Length: 194
Length: 194
DNA sequence: GTCTATAAGAAGATAGAC
DNA sequence: GTCTATCTTCTTATAGAC
Image 1 (tube, each protein chain N blue to C red):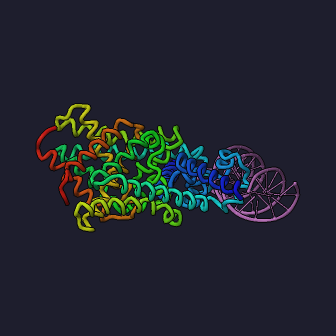
Image 2 (image 1 turned 120 degrees about the vertical axis):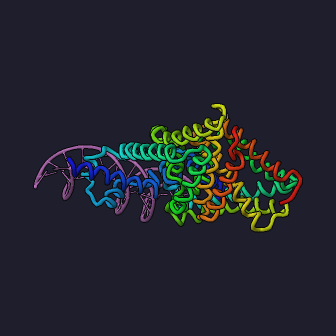
């Protein structure tokens, strides 16, 4: 039982990395077998199929996102500084962004094309950030509608930077654009409201 | 021979749509067989494998891009208006963007993760737009460096809009953001230079 | 140029031994 | 809980008839 929990977590960690690094549909059970060092039978004992693994991975990611956003809420007093912190996330993950794109954006994008079931599993990750960003704009006295629009806009800016960084393998671009994006936020909300 | 050319083109058209609608690695030979109505043997007669089909598809897309950009150069006098036209492309393709994302961004993203060979085939599409956008900014008296940075920025903005539109299936967002993006260009270059 | 047929391999799903 | 083994289906590759 105790060993089983470790194994379960091990499978999730390995699959999470594989799904991110080579895409979900490009990752086979055999890939997970190889990288975990476990047998196929053992993995199917813990997870019925790939979709079940994905669900667990997304659950883990959602928990991680919630923890992160909670931490930012606790540690960062001003909404504008929180928005900045959100942007800085891309900088600290720049090596992965360059090599594999945004873990949330690329996964959702893969499913959004033609896999409604998996799409509905992955979308909540985006919704978490959207909701949190909206809250920050609400604190800056935006109306609900304005706040949501601004949340989506910021999400869009960040996703665009991730896509281009990934496509052109260009970390200098990422750092430059995140800098400009923070300037934009600072300029728009340098202490003022909506 | 003449029928063969039609068949060849038919395969390319069908595969192009399938690769866009469900992703490259998610599309099998059997999918192409079904949708073309041709036999498997006939398709392998024309194309050795999936990669070869992809190469032809990208070649076709590159020709289409070149034709489009050439047309814009001919028909639109002012660089600022050309940049606007570039943004408007997303609006006219909004139904596809919503359902399948940007054909260029999603394809390149799929390969950029872990398929260097296919990545090098797909990247030139991005480079075409990057180069053309840079030219427009050069005409607006930007230095080569500035022009290239602005080209990447605009590419990034548009890709971000495509990703979020696709993720949230939200055409209203697309139209709103493209409007704002055009305002931004108009504001920055309302007849002035860099 | 187009088709059918087959074979060889990879993928996912399932059963049972330890 | 973990493993080996089998089975079915999907995917690709190749050969040969019309």
